[in-house]
Image 1 (cartoon, rainbow, N blue to C red):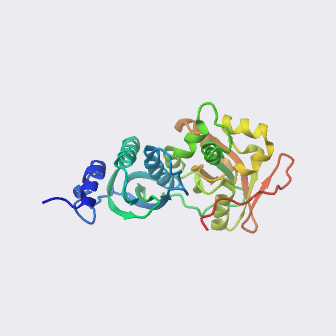
Image 2 (cartoon, rainbow, N blue to C red):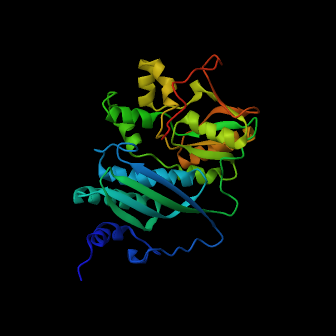
Image 3 (cartoon, one colour):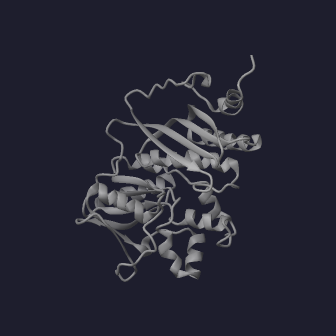
Length: 322
């Protein structure tokens, strides 16, 4: 009996991504045995062509970005990846070359990060490409780091560098010149989920989330969760060499870097007494960590200060879908 087109597509492209519990992608559900004595962590995120990635982005990087943005949510809770479910809504007809590249990117990162697909759904739509992924990870019971928990006087830290994702998008749109190493475009297309750092921060970070919609806007989420204020010292915000070069040529660019999206770095609160431990963890995981401000008592709000300590005006708080 000939397979319906949808199931032929699933068998050709997605079955090779399946692992234990996926049941050969022949059932409407999967079976999952969580590691003994561990608590599951589940998150979901979506990407739409023209919104979260450019329509002409290489399909390999689209698959990898879809997986990595969800892995970043696990990192922000200190979790270890386990498996994922995926829904693909694809225009008809969908070029097989695009699907082959998309799946190749997923396969590469499945191997890199140690997880597999359990199943999902595939549908045909007029367009644009719409992708959704539900990630599943695990932590020790009660060890997940949440957004709530920061206290007045806590340090504010961030991993990696800020602003590269937004600058990379501008480069790919032709609004900025490309840097020689292609670092900025790569950071937009291929975020780096800070899994090892996030796992190590369990027990050190009092509150944590990843930076997806802009440093200022996401700090606002931590402030509201903890009912306190946050202060960012703008000169302390870490930049990559490529971003530093652009900011040096145009100092007015700097404030926009902390409201751009697509950084996928970890933003967290910690006791000042743990500074040395956090710096040691950063060194051990090969991840830059920078103390960029602090939390204070007061109304949930974010203040950004310049080198003189004066508050500065921002062009906008961050990215919003609405």
